[in-house]
Image 1 (cartoon, rainbow, N blue to C red):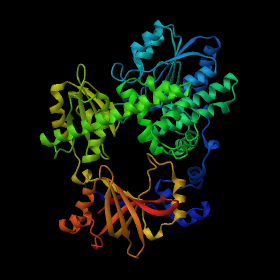
Image 2: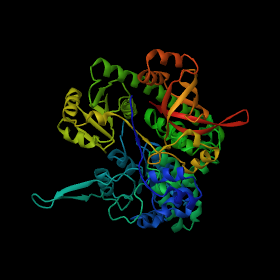
Image 3: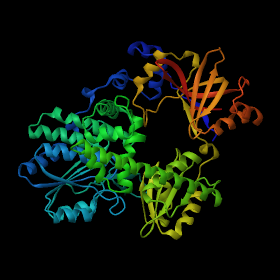
Image 4: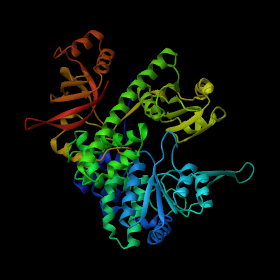
Amino acid sequence: MKEKWVVAGKRADFAAIGQAFGIDPVVARIIRNRDLTEMEDIRKFLTGGKEDLHDPHLLKDVEKGADILKRNIDSQKKIRIIGDYDIDGVQATYILLTGLKRCGADVDTAIPDRIRDGYGINEDLIRQAAADGVDTIITCDNGISAFEPIALAKALGMTVVVTDHHEVPVEVQDEAAGETKLHRQMLVAADAIINPKQSDCTYPFEGLCGAAVAYKFIQVLYEKMGIPVEESDVFIENAGFATVGDVMALVDENRILVKIGLKMLNHTTNLGMRALILQNQLTFGEVKAWHIGFKIGPCLNASGRLDTAKRALKLLLAENEIQAGALAAELTSLNEERKDMTALAVAEAMEVIASQGMSNDKVLVVYLPECHESLAGIVAGRLREAYYRPALVVTKGEQDAKGSARSIEGYSMYEELHRCSDLLLKYGGHPMAAGFSLKEDRIDQLRSQLNANCQLAEEDLTPKLLIDVPMPVDYISKELIQQLELLEPFGKDNEKPVFADHDLEICSLGIFGKEHNVVRMRLKSQYGTTMDGVYFGNPENLRVSIAAKYDKVLADKVLGGVRDTGVKLHFSYYPDLNSYQGLESIQLKITGFC
């Protein structure tokens, strides 16, 4: 798919920033592209540590919630944690369970079943808690919008503490006819609500994940229970892991939590995490945020998607290496099964798009009745990437059809579903992702209405590649590559930088790998500098680009291995050090070409 390349044009005195922090001006420019302008913010970005984490006492109701738990722990009242089935929910549940047990609590957990229960706390879980003699419920990664279940819990005489990080529901009120609408946050009837997104919360950073909120709560609880607060530092590993797994913005405090958490993860003493890292053939000391997002994190998620998230929690709680190894193998196998099921569903979706004449639709609505409903969001995301347009995948539920949607910039999925609310039974979400349900016979109407309403222009449907620095490859050095590591961890809102150089000549090319998806090239700059480049992807993409600029015959020659054809392309890349037989050399990881 053709991309539109755009160069980031944010200005600053890069030389002065570089001199102040001892970094290359190129690194300073990338930092500026991340909207960091104040020297103190740049310092925190580069060297921020535990001392820069915000004071947990600033969270609204955290003192009240900790007092409630202390009182009920001291009187040995039965406490139940109700978590969620994704990475964030499992890690948050682990933090609360381990922390409360350290405080001497009589505590257990309940994690909803994705298919049977759906997201978060519900009335069935409340009634079960009452039947089990539970006095106090504490939620994590959910609860902020559970009005009816929490009202039921209170009616049954239970104490409820909510820890969450999701958006607080709002009630829209008209001040007067024709006047501006007022948005008032609606709060559940819990005894304490700990969520930095509350409008009157004084916490300086709203972007925490659920596990990070749980960690902050345990810090305050330990203080009240007379336990050294430093003991809670062990949970930074879990909070950092969940921050990446829940795709939170890696800015401000989140960046620090992930940096510290990754260091801890690479030396983890948690038997379950050690086993999962080894099961995925990763090396301690080399685990990065990418591995959480795409290797070990999905293994924790897979249990909640295809089986029960209780398995993932059990892994984190494993007490010996044999148990940990067995559970890590099960979760890794589940994730492989999930990947195979996803690949089949994506292929089926693409066949549906082609066979049903949807290729020209600006909004893709694909009905996959046999697709596991927990995979619909992943499949929608893959379709969005492949076609670069909003994608909705609908599956057959037990009663009605259920859908999951993923969007692109400039198209608010939530707002567009709201415009079609007359066709839907339920819907919710935000601009980039949403979920919904509807009657099966209304799927075609939804597709028609979404496309009729769509205002996206062709330019909006062209993906944009933001180039951080148009940098000649001749400038790359080992020292610069090492400095680029200061920008890690990479993730949401701190993506891996993109560099570009123009008119690099392809001197030679070879295609390798079992799937023939590794292209190795020898490239030469305009100034005669030569270095290796590697592209992980479909070689046909390269053939198409060469044919578009030259012709198909020359493209076939280049991909057939003919050397020195004079073919030159513009390349986007990331510089890397390649080690082979003890020798290091600079190579380019190619990300795009035109």
